[in-house]
Amino acid sequence: DAGVTQSPTHPIKTRGQQVTLRCSPKSGHDTVSWYQQALGQGPQFIFQYYEEEERQRGNFPDRFSGHQFPNYSSELNVNALLLGDSALYLCASSWGGSNQPQHFGDGTRLSIL
Amino acid sequence: DQQVKQNSPSLSVQEGRISILNCDYTNSMFDYFLWYKKYPAEGPTFLISISSIKDKNEDGRFTVFLNKSAKHLSLHIVPSQPGDSAVYFCAASENDKIIFGKGTRLHILP
Image (tube, chains in turn cyan, blue):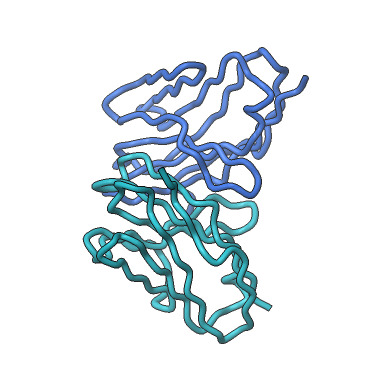
């Protein structure tokens, strides 16, 4: 039973570029949430996808966008990358809403040069 | 403005003793609270949760206590084991949105 898988592992980009991060949820899960974790901080909620729609959104600019596919996998897109976007991006999956304990992937560490 | 606060960045506890990790929150609308554990280079792992209608939940060595009037929750680990050394995150949920604290690094001493 595969858990949450994320790719790529460690993309390196420059300012102004765009990046796409991918997430496959745990088998049986239909809800995907994305988090940004800066060094020394807790994960910060970006947004949640359910039934291919964005249900909830945290305090992140429109440069951060996402998508959920019919197979429940999800993508996080970040445009016009800034140095401050360097962080660990975590994907979490659950069933029927985030109050069900979420299962996290190991994250994608994005570096902006 | 931090809605979920873990005021102790780190905590050291002797193996076999009780570890107590604390968490304070400011939003009285939170209705569900969770604790996650994180090892280096891994994603957080769910440990235990508690609904706002309860004041205690126990699962093996882990017990979470909720004091709504004080807006405080704590995680008790007893007895502490070497494998418990990790970063522990307190999290709170309102309307499907989860807010995490900054974490407390727990060191279990031999």
